[in-house]
Image (tube, rainbow, N blue to C red; front, side, top):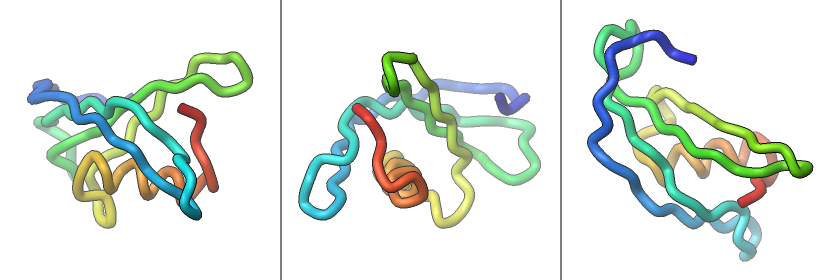
Length: 83
């Protein structure tokens, strides 16, 4: 989705709670990006929604500052995510 040179420094397991319940749990892939005008990192994860596989990518642009923060922003924006 984002055209740039990528390096995969690792993955991070993340569990996010919304109103005391698990809103999303899974592994977030981290990619260092070179050549993007605004971000130096991108986060990505997959999930299934309505039996269809989905993929989400989020650039590390404030307020996004970590794998956990990325999921929290996505969960807050959508109200929930399916794990």
